[in-house]
Amino acid sequence: MTMSINIAINGQKLTVPEGTTILEAAKQIGIEIPTLCHLKDTNEIGVCRVCVVEVKGARNLVPSCITKVTEGMEITTNSPKARKAREMVMNLILATHPKDCLTCDRNGDCELRTLADKMGIRKIDFGAPVKDLPLDDSNPSIIRDSSKCILCRRCVSVCNEVQKVSAIGLINRGIGTTVGTAFDRGLADSPCVFCGQCVSVCPTGALTERFNLREVWQALNDPDKHVVIQTAPAIRVSLGEELGEEPGTIVTGKMVGALRKVGFDKVFDTDFTADLTIMEEGHEFLQRLTEKGKLPLITSCSPGWVKYVETFYPEFLDNVSSCKSPQQMFGAIIKTYYAEKYKIDPAKIYTVSAMPCTAKKFEANRPEMNSSGYRDVDAVLTTRELGLLIKEAGVDWASVEDSQFDQPFGEGTGAGIIFGSSGGVMEAALRTLSEVVTGKELKNLDFKGVRGLEGIKEAEVTLNGQTLRVAVANGLANAKKVLDGLKNKELDYHFVEIMACPGGCIGGGGQPRPSTPDTKQKRMEATYRADKGLPRRKSHENPAVQEIYKEFLKKPLGEKSHHLLHTSYTPRNK
Image (spheres, rainbow, N blue to C red):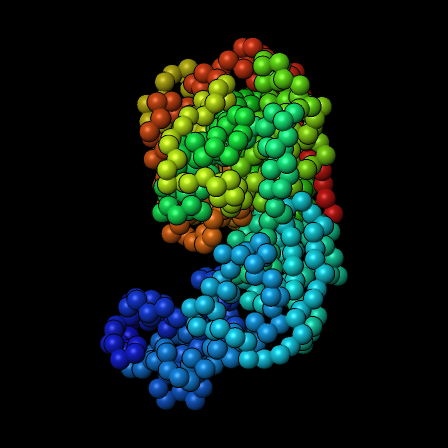
């Protein structure tokens, strides 16, 4: 039984459960204590000392983020001693920090600058040389500027604990300590999977996505280019956060209207190829099941997960579905079927994708992603970049009217929308597999056993008398648990969905900050609300998908489908 602890904060008495930190207790009564290094349940180390408070009877100030309350504790959060110490810490950090705030990629979204403003710091009291470390731009997804690193260790804890990739850590010693890779190489020469979870939690401009806005603007301003954009399922429940909306607000129509104003020739819905993915992947699963192929089949739409299995578990590559992700399928279809249907030179088509994910940039640059004869996807924008694009175009978000996606790729189903949440791909597949296998209409479309933010979810589904064991994992630490279990014969599944990011795409590395559990929950709930609101909720019922098979692809797993919609994988050196 949890004990209750009686304490006082700034003279206000309250009772909290045993084990509560001072920081958590203060939040309960509306008192905000500043923090920089703290990430609940992930990075609770108290190294920055920005959150120090005074405790009556204590010899020194204590870090509120890791100090647990004790009976009768009397805490003062804003005493002169605590304020002076915090200001000293901030001054020391700011003294060596680059002063390029106006041109920094995190301008307007920097926790360090916001905190300095809240603390009333208007001048820096120390003179010190500004850090000048080399920029790491060795990969297509993430830019690393160590000059702006404040050694909060958030990125290290997320990479090591949440993702179990350990691509980065503290290197060197003393004043030369910094966050880097083994042998201080670029991220491209490390085991980094480009999931962007480090970017999501970095409080400064030390880690950012590689911006592709300039290339997109060049294409939009080129009269010879036919510029199309596809928007991922998770974007519609998160883009609003970048433009002043509450988390979980569904902005589908408004997003399309804004992108028309930006100047795209066509605005398409990636839900279309999410449905197409289910058709291909579902039939691939049935083929393996009936022909005694390699099982479990593991999903392939998360590029961070794909790079992870290529790097750490190459023995499972035969288990991974050969289907391209919906993003890449879309690019291939645009430069073949769409180009032929509308008589547009594919060389003049410029495909942009708006994705919740930094690893999608890496995926688009994979050399094998050119089955159309051209690069499938020319530029990838994160949700954050898409918000910036709309702002840069001078679009007044508040006055934008709802608009519909363009045809022929504006048709989506609820199954496509739930791709954005962990368990969504599995649920979408089960909706279609159930009807394809049994030939009967499925009455209950909600497979709630695979929903939610839990790291690993398991369920059993009966199809024509056969019980299928399925699992869903989100976050690479949980993927590791599943793969180790399969490897050691402790687990046995027929079908597994794995997403690199916690929560799935709604928690992607390119999503608006902060991506807290509460925010992810609201985004996830919004995807299921959007699913419920559509007349079609099964991928095989999408008329645009039916039409493309009739006119162009002929059948799932057919020759043309294999050429355009499927891919191969490469074992990588750690």
